[in-house]
Every structure is written in C-alpha cells, then in structure tokens.
Image 1 (cartoon, rainbow, N blue to C red):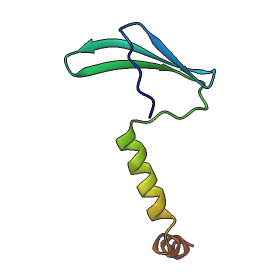
Image 2 (image 1 turned 90 degrees about the vertical axis):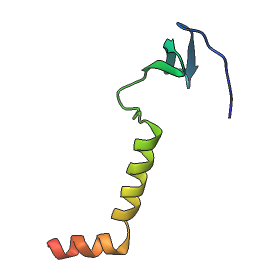
Image 3 (image 1 turned 45 degrees about the horizontal axis):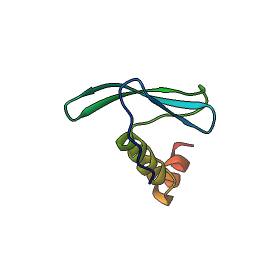
Length: 71
C-alpha cells in the first residue's frame, strides 16, 4: 500500500485519467472528490465486497439451478 499525505485542495492522479481530491477534513472524516471517465466504476469498499459476494453466489451451482428452473 502506498500511503501519502495530502492537504485540503490537494490531489492525486491515477492512471493519467483519475483524479482524487481532498475536499474537506473534519475531525476523523475526510471528504474526497473523484474525477474519472464514466466507464470507470467507483464503489465504496463495503459496497464492492457485497457486489463480489452476490456475484459469487449467483455463479454457484445453486444459482444456476435456480435460473434453469425459471426457464
């Protein structure tokens, strides 16, 4: 993991087309802004992990059997 220090208003650039800017720092919370192309999906980690789990469940044999039953 790369750890960087940024102040309010400062940014990071990833892959030449994604910019992450520190918008506000209030106590132990940091508000960030992300500028990226529309085709780049951006998720909070807990949402991303939930999507991964649901995808994994859908790909299981039980999920495939349930789909077969629909047809």
